[in-house]
Length: 115
Image (cartoon, rainbow, N blue to C red; front, top):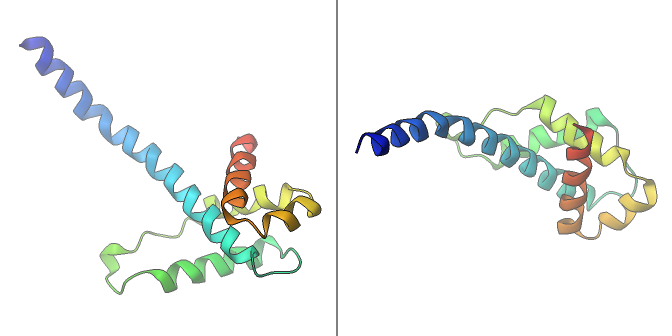
């Protein structure tokens, strides 16, 4: 019984750490998805500041009116995801503009390689 109690206490203490890490990955995925949606309509690559402003605006427009529901825009993480996109070659970016799922996967792979 003591071992079970100790195990439960240990799990409850470590859960916030796993949740926080999961939130970061989720946030990165959201930014990759937003970015891939943005680039699907463009003909040429924009710059870091333009993408950042568009993503920030897009996030603000998509959220409900309740301040409690609004996650804060993490500009640093968004710019890291955008940088991953910009590191890809122009030919690759042109192909990915037409396939959002592949775009998201490629951007996330490139993002993870930056670390």
